[in-house]
Structure formats: structure tokens, C-alpha cells
Length: 108
Image (cartoon, rainbow, N blue to C red; front, side):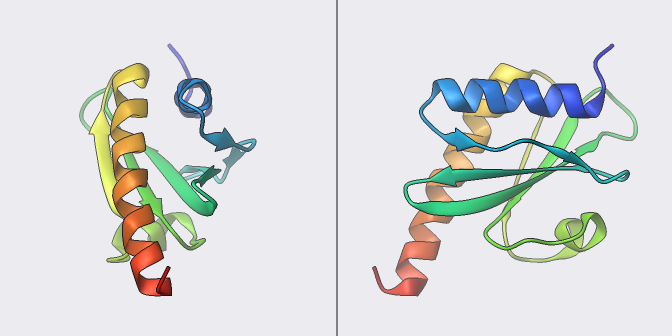
């Protein structure tokens, strides 16, 4: 069975194959944090183990947070799933949405 960090690294590998720049993960105990660049913007990915299943809960935000704040903060979008390849596609879709929002807020 893969650790949470290994699962996140597999998702990042899939994202990289989709042309998204990824950076090394950091295990923060309660979650694993990763940073990705998408269309000139940096986003923070926080991954958590599901409590009652093998699924992963992923929160994508435009600003850095700690594990607890990332889950509770209204900024950002969630992706849920149990397969790293399908989760990578979900994360990419969420990145596209967040990127549009961030660019709109910046007036770009």
C-alpha cells in the first residue's frame, strides 16, 4: 500500500505529463503539501487520506496554508478520488477553474 506522500507524488507525475510544472512534496504530518505552476500562477495542493476509505481528499488553493486551515478555508477547490491518474485530471480541471478566477481578480 502506498503512503500518502507516494500517492501525491504519483499524481504530480501525472500532472507533469500534462505539462504542469510541479515541485517536491512536503509531508506535514496531517497532510502532504505540493506546489504546482499552472499558466504562470502558483497553486498549493494539500492532500489528505480519506477517513473511511482509500480515497484522497485534495484541496487546491492559490495561497499557502497549514493543513487545518487549508481544509477549512473557503478559498480553493476540492478534488476527491481513489485513483491517482483520474485524480490528476480532476486536479487539472480545478487548476483551470482557479486560474481563471485568480486572473479575473488580478484584472488580467
